[in-house]
Length: 619
Image 1: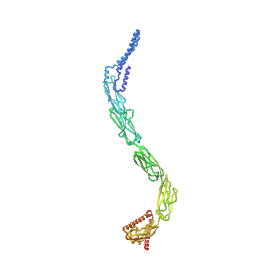
Image 2: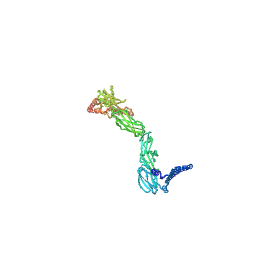
Image 3: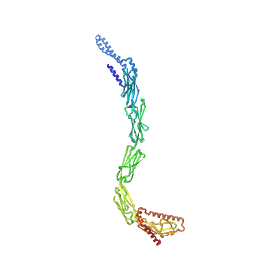
Image 4: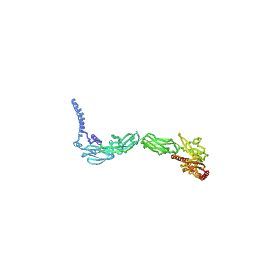
């Protein structure tokens, strides 16, 4: 009974163990026959030897030999009985050789999470216990006398299914290898870092989080269309990941990197699955130099200045971003670039004095460089020049003061042109003098000097002095004797001096002579002209004698032409002198307009009186 129990236990164990191909579970006949032969040999040899010894020793020892032979006989009978039990019947052996176990499909390739229908069948006409062994979730769909159909659900990994049938006490089984596959639907590419400095290394990593079978996967890293690195997977313990390390060059800028995944299931009877990652762009930069600020060391309050910030050895230069600040005030720079240099310019206008910080911040990709520079802001308006009376009368005192502007910081040193005293810093300078006729048109200058941060700054204010005086005649500008050439166009040359500019009236033969239109000289123009210059401060008269000379005999036409040219030149010079010395200051005219209007009648009356006097005296 223990033998069969052991045999049953062994058969049950073999039923659950996965074996490759169909197999029959019986002990081999050769092993049984060998065991029986060994038993018979062990029984025969001792009996012969012991029989010979008994015959030699005599009849007295026969009984003891018989007692030793009985246990061996018992063992012999047990061996024979065992041999008979193991010899199969003729019909049983034929059945074992004829029936087979099969499974359909004989090879399974299932997508992750999907189901599989399996049919397990046998050729045994009257099969006994049968079924399948698997750790997968299974459901029997249907069955027949020689087959059973099962549904395997939610297949998430590779597995081995065992299909078994028993026939006439003999069990056979077969196995089905189930291969689970998962296409590379999600392919991720990681580019670290996205901005890389020139000559620095960067890594490109491709990862497929869910894919199977791994040994059928190939990952390829691409730089543009060029293959960068390829990896196959032979070990199931590996991750579906590939990494490549590359050194950055300028030529790599803006290159696209991607990853291609290929799952080749053709060895398993499947197809080829593809998956690709989204392309990622690599940015290359070079930015190792600090920016430089170009700005005057001194800035004047309220005055606009151009400042600039420059950075060299930068790539790509056109993508450098500039930001500029004066203290907390952000400026509006205008940037430019050329080759490997970039710069920006901005206009600043400081409104407060003292030290202020100018900041230039340049960023390119992940890198930011900053430069600061201190500038000193000063206030230095032009000095104030004050003339007590800008239109003094000749012979009166003129008081001039030069002072600094209240907003000047720090205090300047003042100097007034013509002043002999030297004022202390911040103290005004002054000048007192008596106005003379020669001072008319004099320029008074007030100079302020200021030393800031070791630099000497100068500001100047000027003002013109207008000295008022009565009319006068200078012989150089109004000759008393003038010679005209008969037949030539002539003008009376006389420009009086005075401030305000005097009005000139010349009387000849009782009539006012036109001084603005050239006259063709005749002998009748010979005589004395009485000219009177008048301004609001007074008047003065002068007699001018004109002699008209005829052309001498024998004068050639060329000589006449030269004389005409000379005369015209003198006329032009006379007019130019007149216009040059005629003050056109609007303030003076406005100031004297009322006096001229008041004296207009007096001048006309005075001219008439002078004309009568000249006529009486044959002027």
